[in-house]
Image (cartoon, rainbow, N blue to C red; front, top):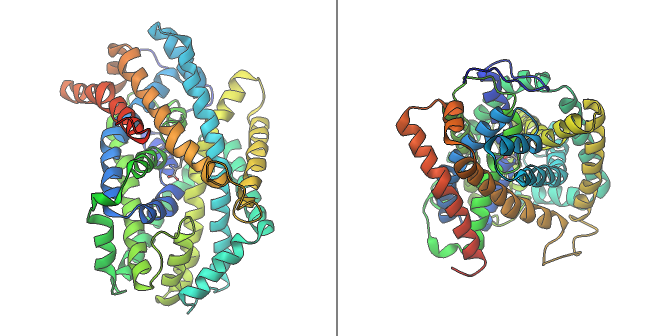
Length: 452
Ligand code: PHE
């Protein structure tokens, strides 16, 4: 492509900067907090296999599609979808994909911030040595006390939301681009250390067996849906985050290569987290299906007993906080970019408004862990409802729509121009995005609805 396009919000300083930001978006609570606990709830190996398969056949092609659309549209996802549908001569209502994504990001951030707040609370606990020599029961009590305390959770949720807004205000080349450069590798090193500790627990093999030995009788249609939804969640797909980031990507950066790196790094981090956690679960006779508290009830045990555990525990929760932060800013970026483009307001104002609304919903999520725990709709409290609605429904549907748009609506030659792939590579992507990805999502939904 010859003409140079650029977003009004700025541009990443380099390909590396984009890789950092997009990896920062992908690697977050999804990998370290969510992947282990949903794997535990869904019986292990078979669930992990389905998840990995979804990363390969849905995650990678759809991430390529999202970055491609973003870079070609060069605007917030809503306006990108509108511009590209005009350019392709198709129904302008495709912009609703952008709308749905913006809403999904908003709903996710409301609970994401609460969980990130827990990791902030744990920074303080680590600092005061609360894990040292504690047994499983004491560690569990620590977590239960936090759950029972809405004031404390709201405090940390507020702090996290403010940190997110602060970084979103800085725009794309702000401090985070620099911070992620050191934090990601550091997180990786700590996870390796934790895996080392897990090997010494005596239940390492049992943990590995649980994670990688598939027993397909343990999963049902809903587990398959959860695994698929998580593939979207963990790669930040289906809601426009990666599309928004792609819109700041310089021309002529290889989208496919970049995608492989991001998806690879994301998957490795999730698997390392799983490998570090499950041996601890079995060595201490804990429940694999403990739910959202799983990492908070297991990893402190490792920190409490390993040498250097005080320091590593402190570092781990600090890094988890930053990993969450680099994801949360991408959850709200589509909304902020859209407000700036369409409502003619300043970036910082857009941040304040969207952040405040998200915060309010998050307070409801805090209550769903204590005073509103029994307030249920479809047998789910507010946290579970938001999680199911976004990760299991909105993201896969959004991803499917993006696949259909990139595969069927966008002109082949436009996609070719953006991707600049060798012919076979392009054909392979095209086949996946046109047929395999949309069909896979569709079939999983039919299965869940009991039609299949
Ligand atoms: N991918 C992030 C994580 O794994 C969460 C996220 C989802 C971020 C969707 C942006 C968009 O924690």
